[in-house]
Image 1 (cartoon, rainbow, N blue to C red):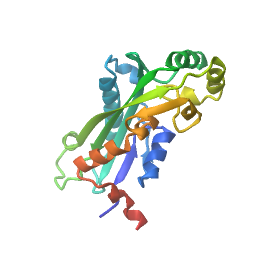
Image 2: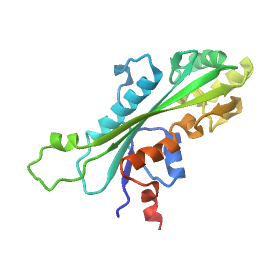
Image 3: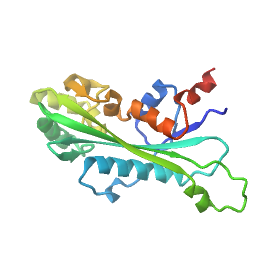
Length: 219
């Protein structure tokens, strides 16, 4: 069996590293989807919709092939006291966000959309639209509670000065310096980094794949 092709519709280095850590070498193809097109107040619904739109954007560019192909889109937000937060727009917003987050429990939502691209058809008369309709899509959401430490204004300013929180949904990187300011997690650890590995395994299973299918090139 050929090793399936896994396309990550995200520019996130953290998501790419997570996939590589479990033996999946993704083809990185950011969707550049305009997230402002989606305005939803429910965080779970928001991240699932955005994840699906990103995956669909890339899937629409794919041609059916005999090589098994999957496209994954993801999106994450942090909710504090019911208010949704994504990446901070600037250092000032990041500082204000951390002053709100410290000592609080945040809810980190990550939407996952996995699309299996339809295989090439022997019916040469089928048009592209009918081929696309055969694609199979799964959409799921994972929630992790994040307990933030009480950090000083000086620590907040120093952390923001590293630029790390400016590139992260939720304004912190668990796998980086931001991990120092997280007391504990309740739920999936990798979900906070950007992609839930247990949920990915379940979604692959549901689409007829085994995670070890992606290791065949190493045998």
